[in-house]
Amino acid sequence: MNPLRPVILAASASPRMKRIVTATPVTAEIVRRFVAGEGRDELIPVVRELLASRRLVSVDFLGENTTDRAQADVTVAEYLSLINDLAAMNGFRDATARTEVSVKLSALGQALPVDGPAIATENLRILCTKAAQAGVWVTVDAEDHTTTEATLTAVREVRAEFPWLGVVLQAYLHRTEADCRELSGSRIRLCKGAYREPHTVAYQRSAEVTDSYLRCLEILMCGAGYPMVATHDPVLILAAEQLAAETGRGPDRFEHQMLFGIRDPEQLRLAAAGNAMRVYVPYGSQWYGYLTRRLAERPANLTFFLRALVSK
Ligand code: FAD
Image 1 (tube, helix red, strand yellow):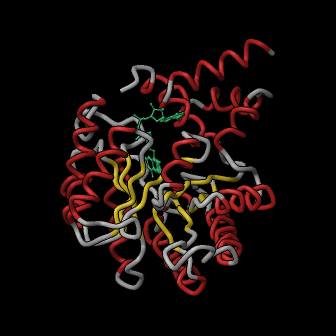
Image 2 (tube, rainbow, N blue to C red):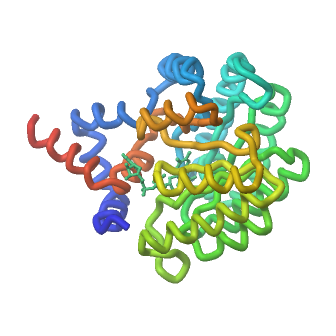
């Protein structure tokens, strides 16, 4: 694992750091690389362009750790409008070419002091009801490990009514192999994991995380569900292709997923080769947490940021 990662993630939690980063003019340039825009007016042309290049999309309205009920309601309203907009862009290729929204339960109210998990679960149900009518998919993002159990509980509950509801599992968590076994019959997005986690719950070394990812991927690929292989790592992308061939999974029975702005040529290559290639596209003004996780993943991103800062 990148040695700077825990340092950056720890520093990013400081309110002072947040004020400095968000007030720095150069930040806007970096944000544009990873975020499609602040509003749907900026998002929609980006989505159209991705769909035209044979890629699929999962759109995330940025926001997390909401401690204000009114803000959670605003988030739900924005997602309902977003689902409408995405539904209008569905079906450009075939039935599996659905658009998708990704959502964090902490943006839907999970962290509210009173009844947070119940409010977030109800809000998730509202989004799924609308998405089912519109023919859009929903996948629930994974946040830090203190939320994992509550998130999976909410997903299990809502999935009883909406079996297509997806959820993200993080290979760096010790528990994830067991979660993959339990959930391998459903839509699972497998990623490495982007938060700062203690060694008591998560693998710390990158080789251990990769090994865990491979074990989890094999479980999902051998299962009856729909694996969503969310990684930019060439070793894991190749492993997914090999496992798909061994298990007889065609391109309609699993998909590759990457983040907007990362390894664009590889995204295009996978799509052109006939694979389902979905891009996770974030938009909105609450980009700080998302951006710091992207900076922490790759020292080169931080160097780019610091260089731009110094050159101003
Ligand atoms: P890495 O080993 O980190 O990267 C492999 C290669 O990809 C690098 O060598 C580099 O070339 C490129 N790369 C990776 N990251 C960057 C970057 N930031 N900037 C530039 N190049 C980069 N994490 C969560 O904890 N919860 C989630 O819900 C979640 N959802 C995700 C959804 C999708 C679709 C994807 C693709 C990732 C998601 N992640 C999520 C993030 C994930 O956990 C990893 O932090 C991230 O994908 C980097 O890991 P990697 O598998 O790409 O491998």
